[in-house]
Image (cartoon, rainbow, N blue to C red; front, side):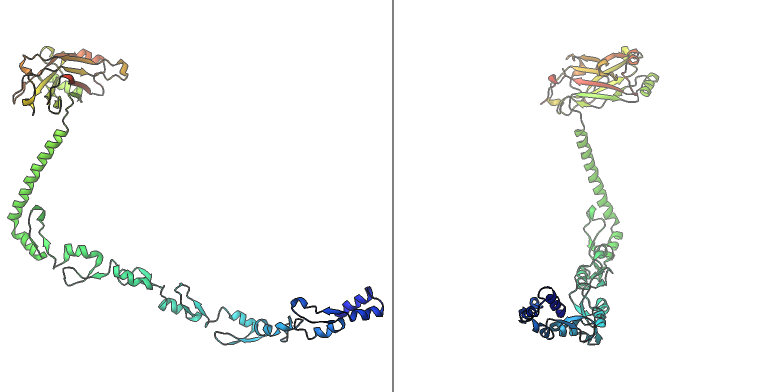
Length: 410
């Protein structure tokens, strides 16, 4: 290469001998100056220098065919030459360079980290044994419940495992699984002090399971008395609750909208039997006011019998009659609703009256109220009932209302 360069220079730039001498005597740097060689001298001496320059590449001494700088030859022969001979640092077996590269990463003596990430390093050939017998992250079953946990947590789990046996608090013989302890104490423990099965009825007896069974057999009469007392007490409570519910459900608004269902059947019954009377739920003029009840004769009563529907209002004995003003003197009105589909075309029938204070019907009632009351024997004719929608879907609505401006209450 050097000869070629020099010859080209001679021929092209300096064709005469004097120029050639000048070139060969000029000072040059080694061609490996950038790699770190510090040599510099006349050009004619460059070839001799390259024969010994440690940065110049030569054929590998082990004849692997690679061109290696002299300065790197020892490292090449020791570490990278495929024809080198070297020992594995783990198993110390001698290999050629290429065989060593294949061997590395597969050597059974090489220590590697556990794949379960327990932090241990073991030789590759012992990894399976480590995973199965020694790894702290291997899965092992709990000896109580059978569920699998890592080796380093199974002990902590066992301390609270629901299936782990625990001693009976009553110190009976057998240990009991923790999750069955309540059932054991309730149903099976022979040392537990159990209450009598009639404790809710008032029996205070406690003892072992056998003692309780014997007590139950021997105390039938006592238990029957306790149960009877409880039943009587509950009956009184039920009566009180029914009375409270009845009080809460009372109508104290002074107005009653009475819904008469099954009108056809009731009208047929009224025509077949004399004196069939329908009575409404009782209602009050106020919370502490008069107690009233409406009655209805579908086939009429008195002057309206067989031709009209008759309505009446009667005064019932109330809880606060002693505090009310007598005679009853408040306007009462009856309204029969027309159930027309168009409210603007509805034509309700309304009748009202002001009580006559001299009439017996409006005096303070005795324990037995007036049998009939006061009202309108000819409230609405049967013909009128057929002409309009006073009965719809076999239902009739009748409102009875007491004028609230005249209600007397404390």
